Amino acid sequence: MARTLVFGHRGASAYAPQNTLPSFQLALDQQVDGIEFDVHLSSDGIPVVFHDFVLDHLTDGTGLIHEKSLADLKQLDAGGKFGAQFAGVRIPTLAEVFELVGDRVILNVEIKSRHQQASRLIGEVIHQFGLQSQVIVSSFDLDTLSLARQAMPDIAIGVLHEAILSDEHLKLIEAIRPQALHPYYQLLFHNTDYVTTYLNSAFQVNTWTVNDPAHAQKLQQLGVNAVMTDYPDLIRAALV
Ligand code: G3P
Ligand code: MG
Image (cartoon, rainbow, N blue to C red; front, side, top):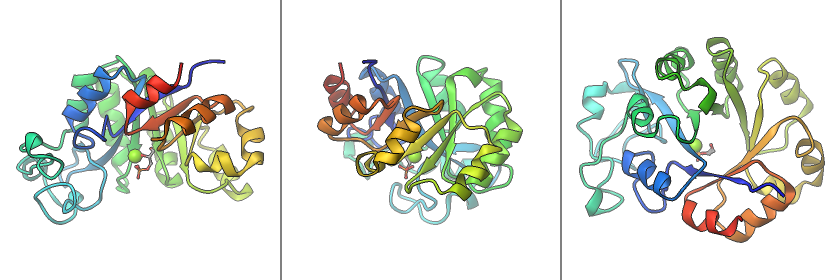
């Protein structure tokens, strides 16, 4: 049985502020096979790595991330709310994450931004770093993925989903030509059809967010390609 790959979800986000450089460095230290992170655009069109649409919960700022310039975002503390030892940690740009991680591991770029230009601008940074073969672009939003496919014909795409894919959904994703499906992991436990249909298909199946080692072992037995976890050290130790 092939070992299931371990992706650090927002880095090693159980131990460091999510989607920050310390979180990604820790994930690398914990021997991940990949990292997953979320991307928005600043108001001046720079791809930045951050999960929420609003700044209030994860930083000392307020308001919508896409209404702030990069210079404004760089003033914010994205670490202090997680722990005093991380005070002053900044929201990284996509380029800064690529500079840190390079081509050492798989880079799962989840596009959160719904801006029409997001895929193009993110694609430019991926190409600038020559990381096309390391990247999987994912999104819950099929329009975003269609734009990503247009902007990046050579990139691997993963379709994020929380519910079983309907026939209508499947028809829409056909044109996107995804390489992977990124289901919420519980779908695989509760739907045997999903398992028989997709785990034996040409799609890679990369699941999230798997923080229980027993769940990770079960998913490995089912044959998933990767699990995304906030605890890369624990999950890696459970998968041999
Ligand atoms: O990419 C997998 C997972 O991160 C999707 O949900 O909300 O954690 O970005 P979320
Ligand atoms: Mg995500």
